[in-house]
Image (tube, helix red, strand yellow):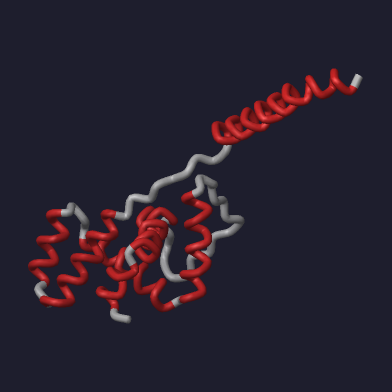
Length: 149
C-alpha cells in the first residue's frame, strides 16, 4: 500500500504546483495592474523653473513653457505642489505611501476630501501629486537644484 502512495506523491506535488501557479496567474489577471506615472510634464516645469531661477529671464520662461505647451497657470500649480511638499514633510511622507499603492495599481477612494484653500480642479488631482512625487523619489537631485538643500 505504501508503494502505491509513494508512486502518487510526485503527481500530487505536480498537481499542487500547477494549482498554485494557476491561482497566481489568475490573481495577476484579475488583480490590480501596475501603473506607470509619466512625470515628463512636471519634470519640464521644474527644469524651466531652474533655468528661470538662474537667469531671471521671464521671456525665456514663457518660451520654454510655450514650446512644451504648458500654460503659465499650470506651471505655477506644479511649482506650488513642489513647494507644498518641500514645506510639509508629513504630507510628503503620506503622499509617497499613497503613490506606491497607486503605482501598484490600486484605486484610491477617499471617504472625504476637504479643500480649504481653493476649489479642487483637475490640475490639482492626485495625478498631479503622483507626477510631482515621482520626481521627488526618482530625481531628488533635480528638486535640490530647484529649491536648494
